[in-house]
Image 1 (cartoon, rainbow, N blue to C red):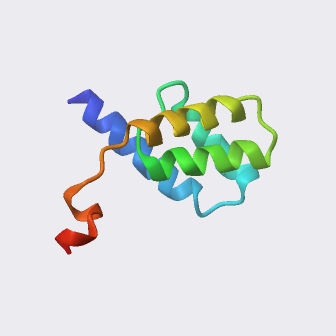
Image 2 (tube, rainbow, N blue to C red):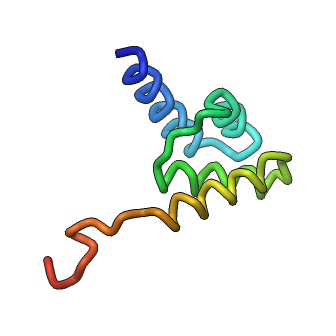
Length: 83
């Protein structure tokens, strides 16, 4: 149950952070390290903020986003034939 609460907390933090300038949003991102939520949108946002601020975690953020995208499963709805 605690894991669900932590995930929900992380989601809310990222949602709020994404409305802030990167210099403020990064504080929320850092609270979630090193176990960042494995979600494409979140990983993209993290990578963009870290790269924009030349943060030391920018290479890791890029690596983890690339790994996510490499192993991402296409959903049934991603196939145009199923629309």
